[in-house]
Image 1 (spheres, rainbow, N blue to C red):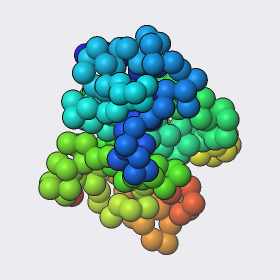
Image 2: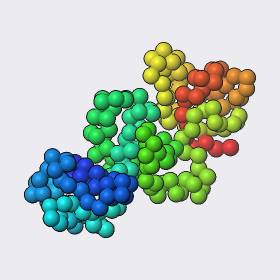
Image 3: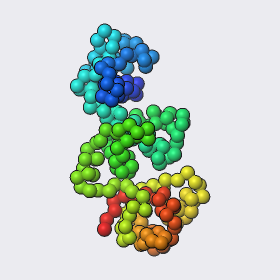
Length: 217
């Protein structure tokens, strides 16, 4: 079942109202909607919510949908702010657009890439997914900065987290590109890593901005 973007926005807000803010229902007018508007009717038609006296109540069938919608929104916030460094009004606008693209499976990949974050940038909890439970049970580190690796560890470069173009260009010139294999040779007094057949030395600040996945001993 694929909901329209507006219907997803409503079920997301309704879930937050009931599950996190202690409310019981949502007044459609707070979202500049009327009870007979199509997005509201869409939720009632799919039995995800019901209207009583003009107020919108979440149904048991709608709780999982609302929970996952909130999860996608808050993962999108983490991605936009932590990785892409988009903040303020621009960041919020992109989050609202991007969250609707996170279909099942895509959100799992992003959650893994972000190392299964438990809160959004505003401190609100991110509802965990199955990938989070599996990661905790298996002890999988997911994606971590190079500074959290031990000498001898090998992994795959996931992304570079910096808004400094000079740093980005320097790392790219070393072959630090998403998908490339990287081996941490030593971590003290400086970080020395190998990409392909070349070795490079960098300081802690720069090493902290390289994120890798699937580390193996």
